[in-house]
Image (cartoon, rainbow, N blue to C red; front, side, top):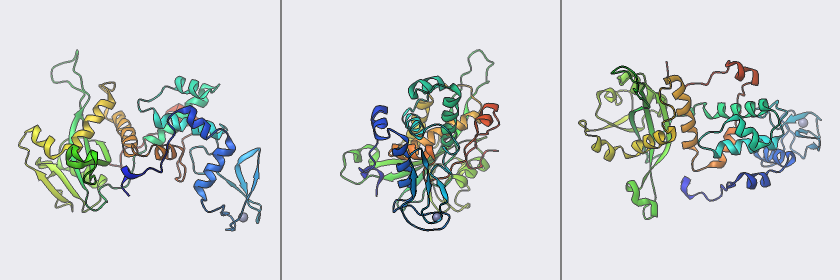
Length: 339
Ligand SMILES: [Zn+2]
C-alpha cells in the first residue's frame, strides 16, 4: 500500500501525549513483548508457546513456564544492559525522532528530568549512533518507479581566505521517484511525482569511478536511473542499469525540469543543514547526510523512526558510554562507498 494512504500509524503529537501512552516500565515492556511476539510468547530456549511468568519488579524479563529459563525483552535493542527505565528510553527516542534540528545534551537532560549528565549523554549518543548508521539496502526496488541521481556542492564559505580556497563538498544523491494516484490534491505538484527513499554520500570528485561507484552501492542492479548527460554517468548502462541521460548542456533550468525530485531533496538538505556546517570536513558531513537520510526516509512514519531508534524488532549494536566518551566509537560511512 502507498505510504500516503496509511492512516493506522498514529503517532503522538507531543511529549506529554507520548508520556501518557507510555507512562511506566510495565507498559513499555508490554509494548516490547507485543513487538516481538504478536501471537503470544514463544520461548527461544525450548520453543514452547504459552503465557510466561512476569515479575512486577523486573518488567524486562519473561520466564518460561515450561523450562523456567529467562528471556530479556531488550536483548538486541539499544536499551540492552542499561539501568535507565524503559519509559525514559521511550521518551528519549520520541524526542530525538521529533526534534529535527537536533538537541543538546543539557536540553535533553532537562526535558527528560534526568539527574546525571552522563546518563543523558549516553542515551542521546546511542540514539544518534543508530540514526547515523547508513541504511544499507539498495533503492529503486518497486515496479514503476525510477531513480534520479545528481550531485551538488554543499557548504563552503571563503571569508578571510585566499582566492580559490573553499570548503565546498561534493554530495551525490539517488532518490526514488514515485507516482501519486491520479486525481488527488497532491497530484498537481511535480506532475504527481514525489520522493521515495533517498541515499546520500560525499563524493571525492565527479569521475565515473566516484559517481557510478555510488550508484552501484545505492541502487539495485537493473533499476531505471535518470541523470544529466555528464560523462561521469556514461558507463551506467554498461554497469547494468537502465540508464537515461537528460541532455542538459549546462542549462540548470533543464535539470530542474527533468530531475525535479533530486533537486527538491538537495534544496531540503541545504535548508536543513541551515548554513551551520560551513567548513566541516567531508568525514563529518557524511554523518549529517546519514542523519538527514534517516529522517527523510521515515518522514511519513514517525513511529518507525521511533522504533528504529530503539532497535525494536531490529538488532542494534550499541556503543558503550566509555567508547563514546573516548571517541573510540566510529560512526560508519555510507555503504562502504567512502574511501
Ligand atoms: Zn522455555
